Image 1 (cartoon, rainbow, N blue to C red):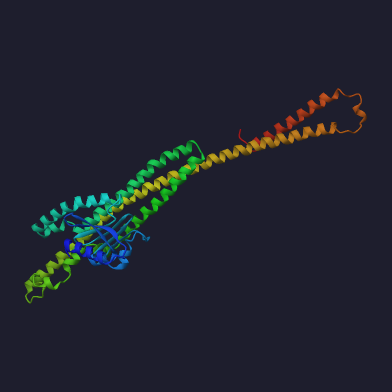
Image 2 (image 1 turned 180 degrees about the vertical axis):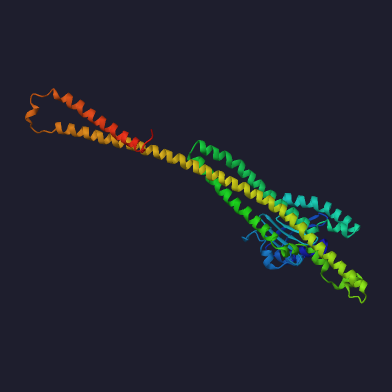
Length: 381
């Protein structure tokens, strides 16, 4: 289906289905030319021959994990804000007016025409040139993977720029404002770590399965699929031949095709590994930031424990002083009782000695308690 026919069909279907929910898409062909479409899901399904269950993965109202699916005729991508459908010669990207999607559209427009021109030149040179070129869908996938990896890496750098000064400020001064600021940054870091981990897991699962990587080559599947219209134009070696020369040619051709398929998978694997290493590096940055936050929390807890110990020491001194003053008050209470004693008469000069002696006893008791506590290590030196 050509681009003009697709646009006409989408406009007609949008006119017929007024009750369907419309979504904004942009369609980019192999020349990098983009066309903004306001089409419902039924029009998209007819355009790219996609199942409903796969299209639901791209619905922004539904929560689906990060996914890269290789189908018979399309590649379905759901990577954060990048929700795209890639065919053998077109790319459909959802929400092209989004601030995070606009740079991706510009990058696709910039890179697809240039690479496509090189691919056509290599196609004219023969099969040797084709082996060194990625097909259209793989080049589009490369742009989208680079975009999501760069996006998450940029968010990580922004988080690091805000987190490290906040942690240092919290270390120097523990306050409610600094604690709340670090709490928000830690929550943001946890959410970002989960997002990066999902992308990493999806790339890892894709790298672990060669069949899934082979399914991403849409152009190769289209080239090997039989079609009635192209059967008459097929080379003679595709059909059974009674002579030995044709059999040898067919077997050698099959071996070349097998080697080419393995090389293609290896090249795609290298591409995915490069993006995997980038996203893994981003995850390592977040892990380092988490360790720094944990170290800061441990340091703050040590400080709080030290303050708590100082308060306990102060409480011990106050309690010892209270006990000593209680004993001193006991002496005053005894002498203040309104009870007639014979020894009270004529011994008024003993009052000052009782006061001095009681104070000395209470002071000695306080010093003894503090010395015992320091000897046992209950208070600092």
